[in-house]
Image (tube, rainbow, N blue to C red):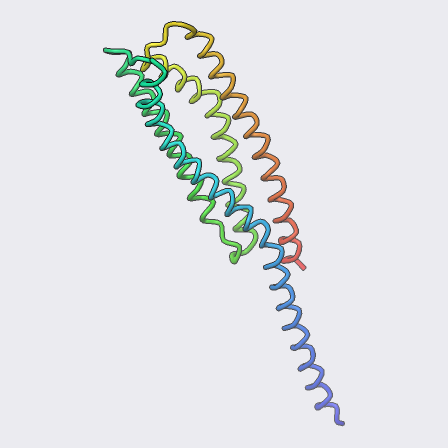
Length: 198
């Protein structure tokens, strides 16, 4: 066997090994990205469901609950101010929810991991800001709207405090859960990034 034939065979085997290594890395990347992809799809589904449920809860709150709980609407200027504030606060939260679902749907694991990580970081920053603003600004405004729209004379201040404290506590729990969720997602993305660097 001559030197040229041996060198050609060697290069052929090197090409095969390089192709097998590339295929193995691609398969491993798909396996590693399956879990974060499921996690993101589940989060998008939950966010979309939460958006739809809130669209169902609003008519129940304003039309069914007052009828059966013997709550009456205010009349005049407080009613209109309450409705305007409520529509403004609800519009902001719906916009945030739609933007959150849309951002989650933009993540594609066939793109390079740096692109995916950048999108995940943007979503994390936006969601944490949304939770903080939602718990300390939008929740009290929505509580005030309820009192401007409905005629609640009895335990109005205690109900307002209970509503605000409950919503802030729920937002705090959501903040903690979201922090843990993003921590796990980032750890999974680190594994994929490490694989791409090899």
